[in-house]
Image: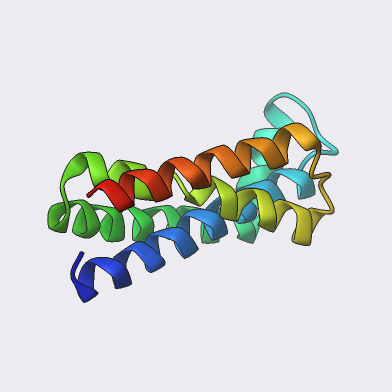
Length: 119
């Protein structure tokens, strides 16, 4: 991969992780409500609007990234973002890293490494 592709991959990893954590934060802040009130409370959350901006930026970065690498390689490299989301969930929200989740992180990471190594 070129230096530009690596830079875009780092941006994609950051934005994907940030957008998911921001969305969870917004939904937790509105979770005291239910039904239509939840939607209205969610729409009033600044975190939701940051989330939407992050998803738009992610779309642009992702499009740039996959335009520079083969699609199969790009999708596999992009799947490593789930690791960032899981680690971020632990650090920001105190979510548990169970044996099953750690095994999943390991398998995903190994798969990404193998595909990257094979390319």
